[in-house]
Length: 265
Image (cartoon, rainbow, N blue to C red; front, side, top):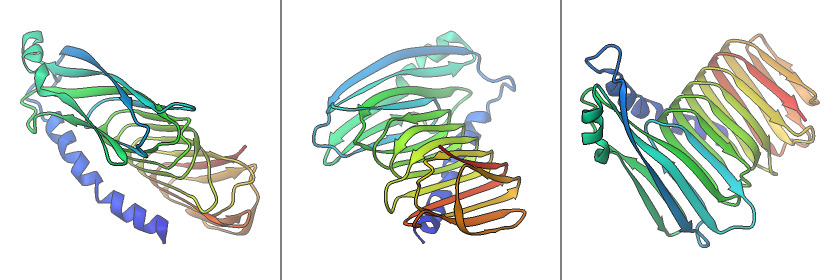
């Protein structure tokens, strides 16, 4: 039931993310803006009392790496404006900003930008190094996302762009409208892996001793597993269910158009 509730909640967010995608794509110039102005930024934060990182972006790549033995967060990146001319891009660069708040149990990083594109594209590319103990939550519209070496729950909603999770020790919750998901996750006891992709494929790598109730479903595509032992296995052309180990955790994978591949390591 937990996975169903997560999927329904986050699937309702995708239409909200697609709205910025549509107005950014609706430039008068069919070829799109070709000139860019950009400005780097950097933050060095003390996060000894924080438990979570929340990142909200619209356009841009996001890379987050976890580090052991630190209570500092380093946030680097580049603010960008793409426009028909360099002068126009530079004139509007100040309209895209990065707001960082540290308070309570969370670090909140948020991109702010105009709600109308006016033949421009605003983007922020992020690179973060944070304590591996932090829970990570990301909401993005367009861009490739990579999260690695996190020892906590990672949740991501992305409208358009591939997602890579590497060396995650915790629950992993992902929803993507258009893009591939490549995950390597070590599931804790009673943890959850929930990946939902509308158009794209899922590649999931998990330890061979993973304990979980497993389900996979595709609309148009294939499901394959290797190097894993399932009990109570059932399958059709579009579904696969079974139990891994003692079945304490939950793994639910859903793809509309694309393939699901699950490998034990």
